[in-house]
Image 1 (tube, rainbow, N blue to C red):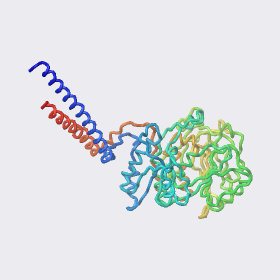
Image 2 (tube, one colour):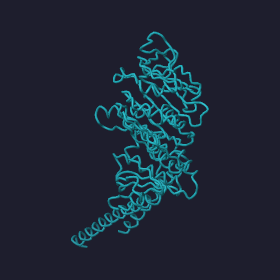
Image 3 (tube, rainbow, N blue to C red):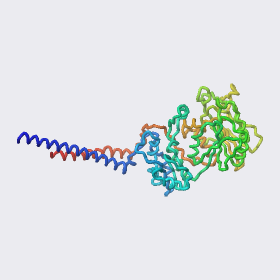
Image 4 (cartoon, rainbow, N blue to C red):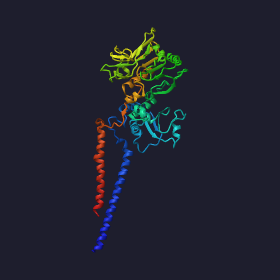
Length: 487
């Protein structure tokens, strides 16, 4: 064989080898792509595991039990009014979309999740809300049972650091309340409970947006009323809130609120002692509360008892939950800050009943008493006895139960928040079972919880990584070997 013919044969062999190498590589890539697509579409939900301690992307056992307890034939629908993004990174949806997938799985046909852009398919708005009652907007979630719709804005599925917002105007999320929010939306649709709460504003109030979210999750519709000399409490008001006021209500509001309370009204008042209201006596609010033998005092409480004080100045401290109100929270002590004491008046009316709900230690002092130690009331309850239509009033000398600053800092499952929820339930006659108290989850808590690695999960992971993937590589290698060995 000539040198030239040998070189030509060698060149042809090299070209064939190159062709086979490129071809098998392309085949391998196609196999992997197809394999990945099939796994995602067919087995994706079964191969998605959440081993984090906080369970960011999976529903809790409480949710599973609730969904299992719904009657067969229940049909709940969650519609994201937008196109489902291909990438969820650096978006609130990275905490929401995977969790909603978990709802579908846990619901076993009772919960459906869709993503439909109303700008491309306007009919979805009419389909969900034929009467145009709910003002459905793009980029929100509509949760529906076919009759009623609850709208959820993704931004409301988190609590935020209030100090960062106040100083920089930036919303820094500190906890994930996605499951809490969607659970209670579903629960409210299936429980049939509904009520309305009004918040009195215009009093240089502390913000109560987080408390409004909590009430919304309990089935309440919330609305604002502006403080004014000419004032009316709406007929559909189930609870009236005066929270974090830094100035007194106008005198013209006293009688309308009294009249509202006399007709089975419900009222929650919270205040505190701070630099903005240190000279305010709340005389008009007290005219209302005095009917229940309660008076907000014009001074500041400090508790230096080492077992109670949470700060050196004694202004942050623990308070004891009175025995008669122990069922409203699982904690025996709650947090208080910059509190005004509440005094029980010597009301001669035998029909009035009031009780302390929260008290300091016996070592507390006030700006007035100074060195004289005593026990002070930080929370009180008032009503009329032996009257089925009696008004009910809860009063707090600290805003650590109602303010955005507190609730955002400590989360929806803090004992103080649990207590205010308990007070609300008591006022409207709801049992503790009338809500799903799902724990909020700290943002970016991806610590691994080994207890979630169940035997079934471990078996699937073992099969995938120890059998399926190695077998695919062996098959590919065998095909390549057989093609090349005859060259």
